[in-house]
Image (cartoon, rainbow, N blue to C red):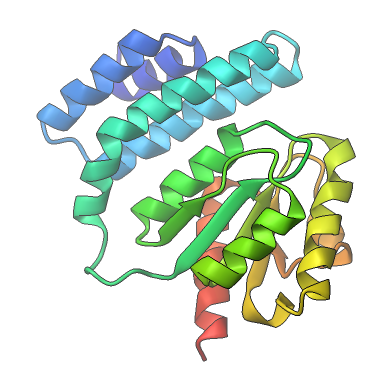
Length: 215
C-alpha cells in the first residue's frame, strides 16, 4: 500500500498506534513534514465524512482528536524546523466558543498556523466571552480565531464578538470564524472579519488579516 494512502486510511480507521508509528517512520526517513500534515488532515476529513453519514459518533471524534494531538506532538517540531525564517508571522488566539466542546477543527487550524510560523495561543473549548476579552488585553493577539460545530453555538460566537466590541477591544484584533454551521455571509453578519472554510484556508486568511493590519 502506498504510504500516503496508508496514513490517510489509518487515521480515518482510528488506528491510533498504526498512524503514529507510520508518522514516526516517515519522519525518520526524511519525508516532507508538510506532506505528512496534509495527509493527516485528509484522514481527519474522512473522519468528518463518516461522522456526517453517522458511521462515527461524538466519541469517535473525541478519539480522533487524541490521535491528531499525538501525531502533532511528533510532527510539530519537524514542521517548525521548516517554517520560513525565525520571525513569527503574527499572533493568533484560538478557541472553541462557549457551550461547544468540539476541538478537532480548532486543533487542526492551530497546528497548521503554528507550522506556518504564527504564534498560537490555544484557549481550549467551551470558552466564554470574558476569557476571550481577557486574552486580548493580556496576550495582545493580532487575530482571534473562533470555532464551533453546533448550530446552537453560533449565537455564542456572535455574543463573544459583541462582548469584544462592548469592551472597546474590537479595533485591536481581527476576527476569523470557522465551523460547519457558518458561511462567509453569516460570518460577516455576526461581526467577524472573515471566514475560513478549511484549515488551509484559515492560514491563508490569517496571513491576509495580519498583512492588512500591518499596512
